[in-house]
Length: 189
Ligand SMILES: Cc1cc2nc3c(=O)[nH]c(=O)nc-3n(C[C@H](O)[C@H](O)[C@H](O)COP(=O)(O)O)c2cc1C
Image (cartoon, rainbow, N blue to C red; front, side, top):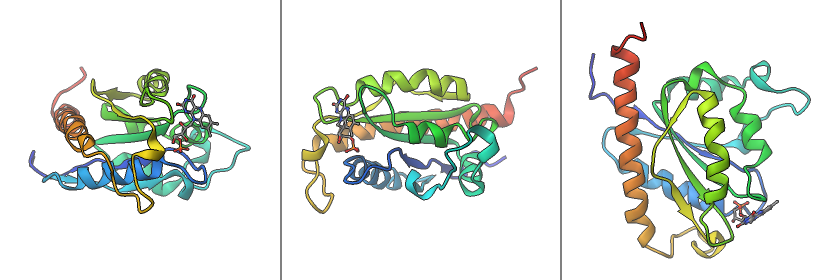
């Protein structure tokens, strides 16, 4: 087994809202993750996943999204905080898979207008991650006052986020590598 082959860690942009600041956050995280040797990534915009709203769960799997989740060794979820919770559309998309997520790492970036960097939405998403079989890391991305963090072209205005997100990504990459080793080499029996 080649333990040095690239990890696949996609970034999920978790809102379909017009004017979403989370898009700039997701693009920033995607670009920072792309700089890491040994990691392949993609930006998955949930707007591009067309799901019916008259059904839910594995019955309405999107083939492309499911294959991305099967291939993934880890995930970044970028979620805005809407009334202290996560967008229903994000949950609707996540609910379409199950076995694809098991024993894979996940890191969450919370995005909020207020000053708590989406900490409340992150806390509300943790039990969902656990039920999906994902393994959460102990670092988060916290993006407060999100509309003021980027200029009109989506360029980051506060460089302190580069160092902060680097810590988050290093932890996620480590956990993704460890869990891939575990999935491939450590028996459950
Ligand atoms: C329905 C709705 C509820 C919101 N609730 C909160 C909230 O509870 N706390 C907060 O700090 N910001 C709240 N916001 C503002 C968003 O967090 C803010 O727009 C932020 O940029 C992330 O969302 P966005 O990616 O859609 O822009 C809310 C926005 C919407 C549309």
